[in-house]
Image 1 (cartoon, rainbow, N blue to C red):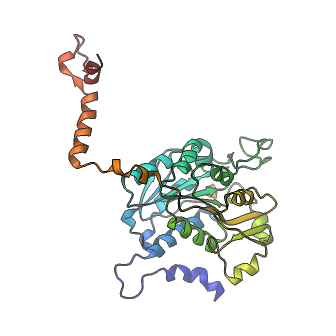
Image 2 (image 1 turned 90 degrees about the horizontal axis):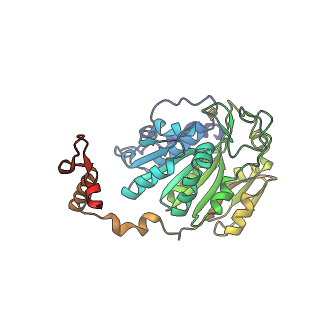
Image 3 (image 1 turned 180 degrees about the vertical axis):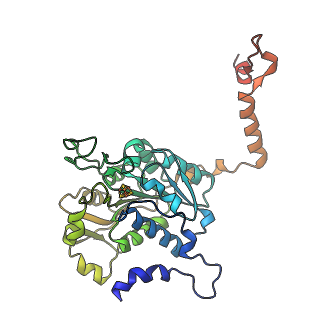
Length: 343
Ligand code: SF4
C-alpha cells in the first residue's frame, strides 16, 4: 500500500463521481516540462498542481508569476494564467496583480539568484508590504539556467564557473533575512524530496493571508548532484519543526525522522534561532502571524475608482504627454503639452 501511494496520490485528487464541475489535476497541467531529469523543480510543480486541485482553485483565477531562471519556467507548466517576467522582478509584478485583482490566487516561483541577488531589493520590500501571495523560493544554491555560477546561497568554498577556487563569501540565509524584515508574516522551510511535507506547508502558506514565504531546498542533479545528499541519505540530519499551529506529522514520518523540536510559530525569536541552525537542517513552519496587515487592504479605499474616474485619469495622463500643435516650433517638432503648463 505504501509503495502505491505516490501513484495513487494524483488519482485521489480526481473529482468525485458525478461532480462534473470539479477541477481535476489535469486542469492544472500546462506544457511538457523541460527541466533536467531528476530536477527537484518537478516535485515542486507537482505539489503546486496538487494544491490547486485540492483547493479547487479556478485555473482562470490563478496566476503564477516568475522572474528568470530554471524555477521561473514553472508558469509554462501550469494550466493557469502566468507571467514569466524579468530577472528579479517577479515580486513587483505579483504585487501589481494583487493590487488590481485581489480576487485572484497569486503564487510566485523564484530561484535563489532571481530572488536573493538581482531581485533582493524587491524581495525585502515585498516582505514588508505583506501582500497576499504564496512565494516558492526554489533554492538549489547555484545558477542553473546559465550553467553553474555561484549564487547568494552558495556555501563558502563551492567551486563554480565564477568561483573556480571556491566561493569566498559566507552564504546568505533567505529565512534569516525574511524573518528580520518588518511585517514578516509567514516563513517556512521544506525540501523537495519530502513531497508530503512540501504539500502540507504549501497548503498552510496558501491559507495564510499575506506574504507567505517558503524556502524549498531543491536538488539540481545537473550541476550540484551531491549538494543535499547528506540530508537525503541521513534523515537524522533533518530536524522536523512541529506544532499544532504549524507542521504536524503522521506516525510513519515521525519514526523516520527521530529529530524533532516543538516550536510555536508565533515565537519570532525562536523562529530566528531555528533558521540559524547549522548542525542540522530544520524543516517546518518557522513563523506565522495572521494579524499583520496587508498593504492592499491599507490602500483599499483608494482602489475603488469609477469607470468615469479611470477614464478621466487616463485622458489626463495622455494630455500631459501629447504634443501641443499650437506650440510646435519652426523646426516642426512639437512641444509637450505638459511643458506649456509648467511655464
Ligand atoms: Fe533543474 Fe539544475 Fe537542470 Fe536547472 S540546471 S533544470 S535546476 S537540474
